[in-house]
Length: 270
Ligand SMILES: Nc1ncnc2c1ncn2[C@@H]1O[C@H](COP(=O)(O)OP(=O)(O)OP(=O)(O)O)[C@@H](O)[C@H]1O
Image (cartoon, rainbow, N blue to C red; front, side):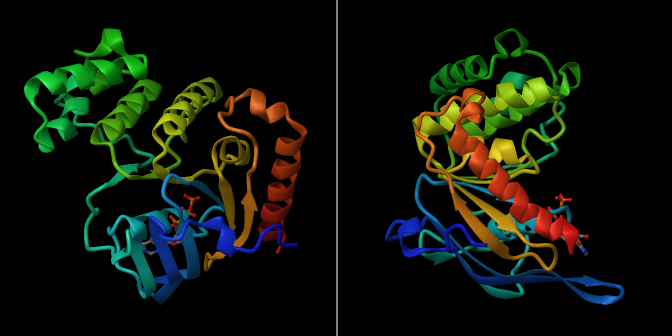
């Protein structure tokens, strides 16, 4: 049963930030072509937060890689601000993937500073912005530490601070809190949610955690088992700003969570 039709006209603003039309991807393998994604159509409005959930291997990461220009599509088209996505990560797109990918030879401060330096921000502004971001992610006393001196959760926070320093229009996040323990997921999830609610950037957020998806997103898209496509869309009309933890106790939250689980369960049963 479809709760809301995918890409319903009211689900996007007139000019989508990101638009996917009939996107498919086949990987070349020794046994021939393996179709990982088929006919994915999706619009993301400016400032919209969309979460993607689906069974393992349904192509969620592949979809993010296509949007990031890290893989060419086999079929269909991806447009960012109305223009086809070029090869390589487009300007204005920030990635937060599962591995934290920090520079091990740079301190926390210098990792966060890196995108600011690339953007040509003055040294004084860099210092102020690094201080602000370090404080925001709660790492003030670790500014001069190196990544290998931090816990996994702290490294993750540095990665998020670095993405915020880059200040992209579109965040592509693949299980950004994936390897963290429950307490850290709640803390970082809450931090990112309030940051997003203040900045209003567009987000595509891949997660295995349905609760996390409902707590954060404007829409949750459920993907089918491979070859992956978007099978159902759930609009999350819970009030904003949301409290990342408290919102879970609202009856509407629980109704949505149940409906999404049912949709996912169909993919596991087949
Ligand atoms: N480079 C590759 N070559 C061949 N097949 C690949 C390649 N990368 C991914 N696949 C296959 O494509 C499918 C989709 O993979 P993808 O990593 O996008 O799934 P996912 O939904 O992100 O999975 P998970 O939730 O487990 O992270 C899987 O069956 C995977 O084995």
